[in-house]
Structures are given as structure tokens and as C-alpha cells.
Length: 288
Image (cartoon, rainbow, N blue to C red):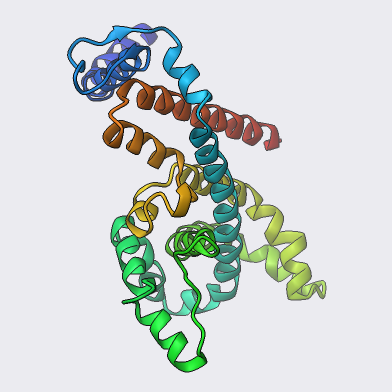
């Protein structure tokens, strides 16, 4: 009986498995072939096997390590900021959301806009010569920083990413906060627990798994960031905002080094896979 059910499940799942193999398998195999070959646009149809040469070229490229350092720093900072702000908003606005659920639709508007469109919007608003924000800062205070210049560009892209994706963390934390049984809060209130102590002793421990998941998701998303930064400032002054994804894009399309770009993409995939495995391992360790 069990074997029959197993065959039926396999039969039902086979169309989805075949679809995924067709859609994901072919690009993956092609990327592996190009990653281990000397490939350019001229030799795209006839790649020449070169072993690990592309990986040696990538690992020996200072721009790659600059991009890796930027992605790591950007992912960590934005993940922490988004989760801290999202948690604060979820706890502070929970009574308002409970009374007026429609306010959630307003709070998540930045998350709905396409990241590329957000990058273009910030580029227009912050442009040194045509942007309204620098114009009015100079008109009112006689001073206006170059938001997209070398001194402030990292803070600008971090702020843009944080403002757009804090609503995502807010939704996760709001759901976790509202799922805490009201009996726990009532019992703590009867015992005389103040709101701050109630949060640290009861609500925070119950929300901690959600905090960990949110931090991990936002770090992965920040580490592989591309569209909003690229439309806002490109690779930045001196390549200061070149993320791993931007590095792969420019290596592939601008320099035509397809094999090297695919090797960098494979390294990025392996890094993300290892981080995901580490996150799952840490999650299992936290379970009782």
C-alpha cells in the first residue's frame, strides 16, 4: 500500500520535476560549461575547456574582492537596520493596525514598487544638479552634500535599500507579534509586569525565531543586490558600489568575459548555498 502511494505521488510530482529540470537544469548546465571554458561572444558556440583558469582569474581579481566586501558589508548593515526598524514599527503600531487593518496597505507601499523604479526615483531626487533635495538644502541652509559622491554614496544606497525593504521585515514581525497568545500578556499584566519587561521577557523570546529568519532573508537579498543600486548610481565612484551581481553583469556584458562571469556566478551561488545551509543548521539547533 505504501509503495503504491509512493508511485502515485511520484507520478503526480513528475510534471513539476520535469518542468523545473527543463527551466533550471539547462541554464545551470550551460553556466557550468561556460564557467570551466574560455568563452567570449566570439566563441560562444565553441567554448574551449580551460579547467579552473576562470576561477583563478576571478579569485585573483581585486575588483572581485572589492565587490565581495561591498556585498557583505551592505548585506549585514541593511539586514540589521531593516529588522531593527521593522521590529520597532511592528511593536509600536500593533494597536493601530489592530484597530485599522487597512493601514498595513499604506505601510507596505515602498515594498510594492519595483526596485529598479525606486533606484530611478532616488536618482532623480538626489541628483546633484537636477535633484530637488540638494536644491532645497542649498537654498534653505546654504549647504548640500553630494549624495551620490564618494563620501556619501554608500550611506545613500544603504538608506535607499532600508527604506524600501523595512516593510517586509515589518510584516513578518507584525504577524509574529500578533500570533503571541493574549493570555500570556494578560497573565504578565496581572503579575504587574511593565510593557518593557513584558516585551523582553515574553514577547522577544517568542519572536526570536522570526527575527533570525528575517535577518537571514534580508542579508541574502542585500548580498545579491543589483537593480536598485545599478539604476541609482551604477558601480559608483571608483567602483565603490559594485556588488557581486553588478560585478558579474559588467564582466559578462561590458567586458565580454563570459567564462569569468560564469565562474563568479558559480562562486556566488556556492556562497549563497553555504549561507542557506548554515542558516538551516542554526535553526535546527535552536529547536528544543
